[in-house]
Amino acid sequence: MLTLLAAIFFIAYAAIALEHPLKINKSATALIGAGLLWTVYALGTDKPTMVSAELGESLMGTAQIVFFLIGAMTIVEVVDAHDGFYVITSRIKTEKLSKLMWLVGFVTFFLSAILDNLTTTIVMVSLMKKLLDQHDDRLLFAGIIVIAANAGGAWTPIGDVTTTMLWIGGQITSLSIMKSVFLASMVSLLVPLAITAFLLQGRDVVAPQRTASSLTCKATHFEKTLMFYMGLGILVAVPAFKGLTGLPPFMGILFGLGILWAVGDLMHSGKTDDDKEHLTLVRALTKIDMGSIVFFIGILLAVATLEHTHILSSLAQWLDTVVGRLDVIVVIIGLVSAIVDNVPLVAASMGMYHLAQYPTDSFLWEFVAYCAGTGGSILIIGSASGVAAMGLEKIHFFWYAKKIGGLALVGYLAGALVYVGQYHLTH
Image (cartoon, rainbow, N blue to C red; front, side, top):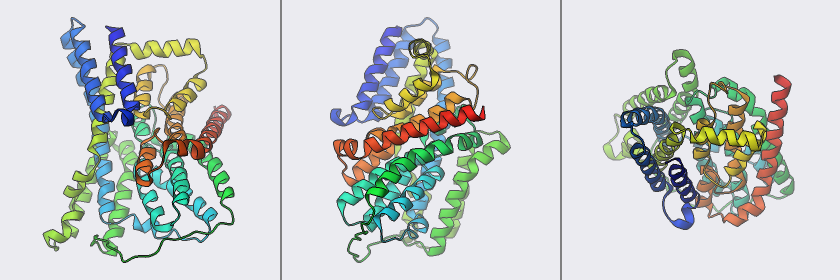
C-alpha cells in the first residue's frame, strides 16, 4: 500500500509541475490526488475509524490555513477596489531607470512583507505599465519585482503562503522569523538589484503617452486612504492578536474582516446601489482566487496521507543518511521549489520533520521559510508571483531563465550563506 501511495503522490506532483504543458489546472490535480490517496489509505487498512479520525485532524489544520487566506485575500481585494494602493504608487516618481529600479525593489520588498508576494507582484507590475513605455524595460523590472516580492514575503508570517503555513502550524513565531530571516531576505534582493541597477545606469525613464483615464473607481480620496490604512492595519495586527489572545490567526483575520465590512457598509450607506456595488466586500469575495484556495486544500490533504502513513518521516531519515547536513538538505529543498510549487514542498517538510525533534523557531524551520520563499524566484514557474508576472507581461520561460534566473540564484545562495552565518554567530 505504501508503494502505491507514494506512486500516486509522485504522479500528482509531476502533473502539478507540468500544469502548463498538460493544460490541466493544478487545483484539479491536487483534488484528484487527495481523493485517491485517502481512498487507497482507507481501503488498505482494517481501521477505518482511525483513518476517519486522522482525516478530521488533517482537515482542522487545513481549514485554519484556508480561512486565513480567504480573509487576507478579501481584505486586499477591498483595498484594491477602492484604488487604495494609489496611496503608495502615486509617490513613485523618478527620471532615471537605475533609481527607479532601487525604488521599485524596496517598495516591493516591504509591501510584500505586509500584504503578500502575489498581490504585491500584481500591483507593482501593473504600476510599471503606467510608468514605463518600453516593453523590454518592463520585462526587466517585472523580473526584479518577482525576486523582491518573494524575498519580502519570506521574512514575515503573512508575506508568503508557505511562511503562513509554518506560522499557523506552530513551526515559527512572528517576531522570531522577522528577526532571523530579514537580513538573509534583504541580501537575496540586494545582490540582483545592485547588479541590475548598475547595468541601467545613465538610462532615462521613457514614460508612456498619457491618455484620458477610464477609471471607474468612484471612491473619494478619504475613502481610498481609510480603506488602505484599515486593511493594512488589520493584516499587520493579526500576529499581535495571536500573541495577545493565543487564538489561531484565522480568527484574527476574520474578526478584522468583519470590522472592515461594517466600516465599508457604513461609509457607502448614502450611495446608490450602482455607485457602491463594485466597492462592497460582497463583490470582493467574488474576485478572490478560489482556484488557489482549492489547490491548497487538495495539496495539504494529499500530503497529510503521507504523514499519517509515516512515508515522510522515512524520507527524512533517508535524506539524513544520504546527505547528512541539515543546511544542505534545506538548500536543496529551496532549489527544487524553483521547479515545482513550494506549497507542497513546505507541506512535505512539515510532515517529514516533527516539532518534538525540531522545536518552534529552530534552525530548520526558519531556514525552510527562507529557502522555500526565495528559491522559487530562480525560475518563472517557481512561485505564484512569477506565474502572475508571466501572465501580466507575457514573459517567456526561457527569457526569464536567461536574464533573471542567474541573478535570482546568486541572490538566493548569498542570502542562504548570510542566514547560516548569522545563525552560528548568534547561537
